Length: 397
Image (cartoon, rainbow, N blue to C red; front, side, top):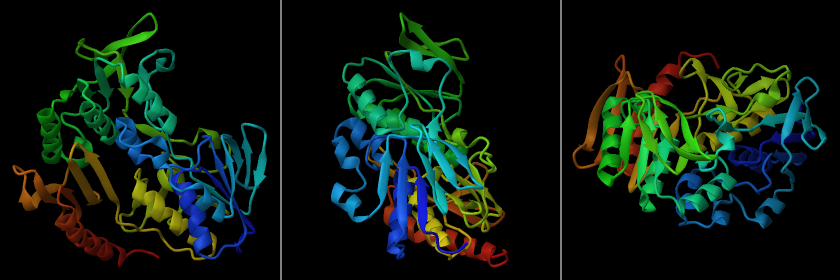
């Protein structure tokens, strides 16, 4: 496809804004439109579960750019008007308000939607945390809460539990894994994270499924476990995962399977690309379809998609990078740590709470994880890069 006259980006958060900025950096002078479901100017999501929720940041500090910077981008922002359908062949998007938007290239950056319990929307005291409005509403209710339960033992749930505890509230973290993030980091690192939370005072009720919520007169009163136990709470945060926001793409002509399925260049169809949490593309280095839910990928993939739109179509083969801040601990991971890998501490010491661990499978380094050792972790990243390069050398460009 030749250089487009106009690009429509559906999704005005980090991935969408980064795509527009990358287009301009690469010299694109055509029309750029960003369509956003929320009424807010583009903002960053990682601070929502930490700085915004705790109150150490005012909500405006989470904005990705100031108004003058957005104006300098020379893009049209249509905010507060969700996309409701896409005709991929015609590259046409219909919105909730009735707008019909067409462009030569369309970038899908709609992100995720939280998974929820059936009927939770009708209960007072039950929250999810995905948007800026969610964070503000949750913070307001936490100000008068007496007992909090977080349902979800993944990244978001553990971050919320840590933040809520630092606000001075008793918190229980519930989830089906034996330890937090066990399926992602494996048992050794998961036990380390469990010890961090327990030592700081978070109550862990893990290894048992949550079956539902208890209520009285329309207000949540607790969380029910498969064992029959009831965890009392007047505020419950549901954080047991998210799904790609693709419902609006039904009938679009695109392949949807745990995200928008793309080729190795992040192209879903002629003139249609996906970026960020919603994109599931073929990673040549890993020889698999991959979807990454992290802030770093949103920016890197956006730059790659912008280049592809302008004619520089190459496989997107990043070394995945992830981080989380919990209490005073920064955890960083490069590559693909996994529960079935062989894990060895290669620097520092687990007992001291400062270390770097290496993940290996079949003799190949697949990931490194750092715990309060950012410099050493970055240096160890090269081991993952080298392994990726070895795998790519035999791949198809």
